[in-house]
Length: 364
Image (cartoon, rainbow, N blue to C red; front, top):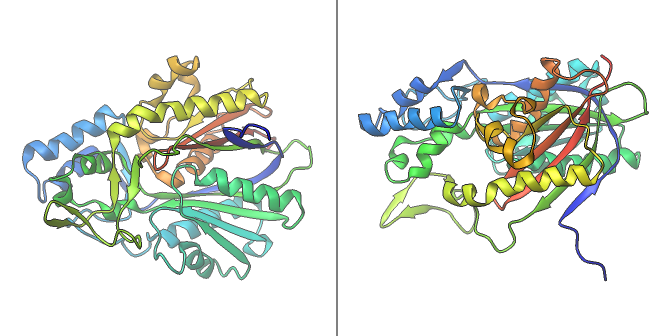
């Protein structure tokens, strides 16, 4: 019996026909988040949120709510399924394809429109998509598992075209009253943003088109508590409480635990790509936890800071949407020349998972 591998790697190449993004509302500044906290918190606590955001290198984000009240639902037009629909349609337009060309639609999110039916079912409704769909309830590395499923479907010829969409509307879980009793909620308000990103995948024909390869996924969380969790809505956690007082909150952020173990996930992903022979990398896209990740990872990985792409400064940490929004940003800004490689390093603090792939720019 052979020793278990720390991660799974799929070397198959997949064509990237198009990417798309959808961001809700207008860009919201750190000052906007301070004003939101002031709805219930004092001046010191409210300004502390702005200071945290600045320390994290996050200066703006897009939110699916208006911040007019402590607790809100997504505004009409910016619900999770609506953001997904816009991102998917944009990716299809970029690929010069239609909804009817898609054989499998995969979604991944931690902030669904409803727990059941899955969020992606509502997306299919909005798209008028009658085909097969499925959803992963996973955060920042949901993209990697979705890619493994897509790879199996495409290389086996069970599908010719797969669409993946990652999305978050987690800002609806912000509550200033929660933040008064849980410092982790202050970090959430400071760093998180909403949005959706989508990618259209096909079989790769070894031509000059854009493609990805060396998809990997691994975990270092066996036996560890969760660094980031969703308490509300689970069958074993119908409510969360602090002492004797019920607290309405969902995203629980153990940022000390994440800080202790999180950086090792990026190192593990970096080594996975190197082991696959992906060593001529022009730029890296690490999970956009914050806008200062480049200066943190550069000395650890031995990669110059200017080779890391940063969109967290403008978008915040968008969770499940982060990698697809980041890839779309790289493509939209034409940061790679044909033939150059982007190394993707995904990391997720829920149970300390990591995943990623190599993306090769094509002729467009």
